[in-house]
Length: 202
Image (cartoon, rainbow, N blue to C red):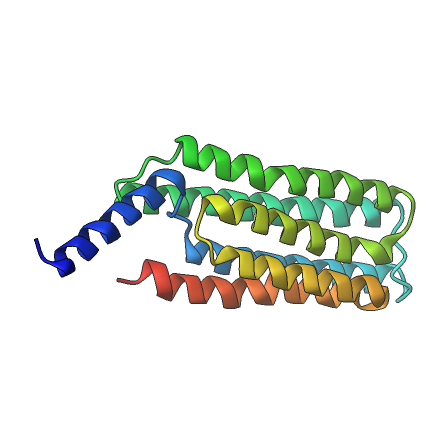
């Protein structure tokens, strides 16, 4: 057997090991749609707050509850779309949607995300609205980095970007909303597009 054949065998073994330990069927298109949902939610929130809070951006009463509902809907549709498109891609690739690698991915993604979500709700209940955008970005970035060990490694770069935007939002809380729009909206669309053409388009 030639050296070229040995290298080919090693490469195939490495690919098999990666497939067995990583869930690689994440859909780039789901990232694009998540970004679109975020932009729609941000536009609805901005209109609601500036129209009914007289430009003060003070959230209370029904406005506060409606903004939380919008955030919930954005998260729900993003997750539902991600599950649908990822399941379809996994079936196309002959990959199981619920195995040890996907379980590890989900577990490691949810730990920082749930902790961050609960902490953000606590901050919101204390009326510290300017900090919430940065917190969501930072914890989401940590969740992506944590999950990247069990999926496509490239998602960690999106995580680094989210954390950087979150830290800027912490320094300039008055721009937290717009940095949230960049992180969850624009960056998802840009990164999802890149992932789609790199991994989905054959």
